[in-house]
Amino acid sequence: MPLRAATAALTLALLAAACTTPAAPEATPASEVTRQPTPPASAPAGSTVGVWVVDSQTGAVAILYEGDAEPLIPDASHPTFTPSGVVWLADTAGATRYAPSGGGLAVIEAGSGVIESNEARARTYYLASDGAEPVLMIERPLGTTRTVGPDGIRPAFSPSGASLAYLARSEGERFDLVVLDTNLAQRQVRATGLQLCQCEDFSRPVWSPSGDYIAYSNFAAPVSDGPGDRGSFVVEAFGPGEPVRVAGEPGAVVGWLPDASNTLLVGPGSGPALFDAATAEQRPLILAAPQLQGIATLAPGGGHVQLWASTGDTFLVDPRTGIELVHWQVHGNSALTPVGPAIAIDRRSGTFAPVPSCLGVLIAHPRLFVPQCVTGAARSFWSPDGSTLAILGAPAANDRWLEFWTLGAAQFRMLIPPSAEPVEWSPDGRYLLVVWGIGD
Image 1 (spheres, rainbow, N blue to C red):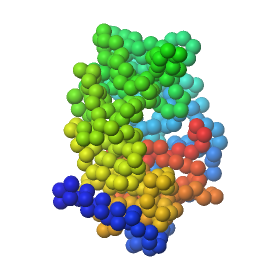
Image 2 (image 1 turned 180 degrees about the horizontal axis):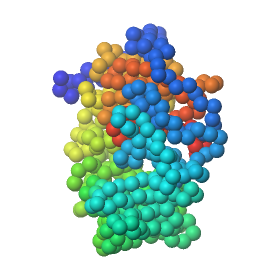
Image 3 (image 1 turned 180 degrees about the vertical axis):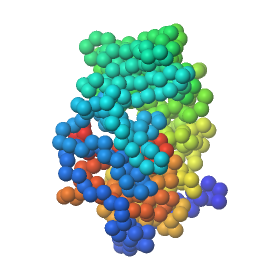
Image 4 (image 1 turned 90 degrees about the horizontal axis):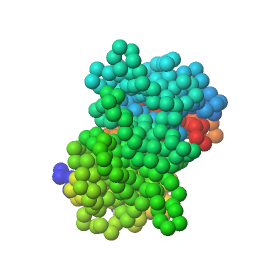
């Protein structure tokens, strides 16, 4: 079925549920399966702080940390997956590494405190922690190393691994954006006077896929006669060019399109827009509705953009053409799954959710004849390719549940600690990082 036809059918099914107020949906065979004590199910931990990695196919758990004190997480407010699918977690004893191993889970002690590594051009580059704060290091053949000081933070390797961008403390709470060629041939300061935001990791440099440009944010306070250096910027990685402001607000960098076009998605401003780094030209994301404002997220892989409009509508847009792929007249969490567009509407949607009969998460999926309500659910999280949906239950006194759906079918439900929250999916979409008690 063509995408437009599938979209129309899905939208009609969703609106049919949305525009009526029937009694709460009866449990379906699929939802009944999730309520059986189907192993494996993880018992909740008694610790106040924890970091788990959950296998969405089996329910197996890799425990990176459980305790009553917050572990040291170098350069981030939360643990996170690296592009290679590894999570590094530092504590006073060094660092623990999680990595998928042979289709299963592995937790590997790394006494050297390695945080991230990247192999390119027969050299190994790594970031290490001395147990207190991150130290960036580059190791060359013959055992020689170069240390990029303890004040280097927010490190990011270029796509080829040939360069490293990081923020170096310059004075007080201000930082410089530094780019280092990992051949150790050049070191350039590409921007100065940056101020950071502790609320999110928006300040980390973001490389373009070509490695030619870097996007970043400056959270400096506005000056009396204008914004000063506050905002979101793009700068050449190596070269004489000055930074170009792409948005007046910091944290507006959404992501680069995954091709060689050097095109950046930015927002919010006057609406999500595409910025061409080579020409410094900017155009609205949705060509047919340039006045539309909202919050945009770029899907992993860059195949589509989800836009939450101020009207409460949800759009999926092709970022390369600016053409709308699908449009729902509800505010939800959508994905372009391997079998077509799908949407999950949860209670965070507030007045935008026209499904008062569903006290949980409502799922509309091409594999479902009618939308299904997962009662008692609070939030939902699509995997990068849209094949799997993780659904988080409301917290109970001693635990909460986490349920996985694959291609519109419920698979199993497991228990997690009552304050645990999924943070993000691994790049391959199989593993889910779950954290509690960190940064609260």
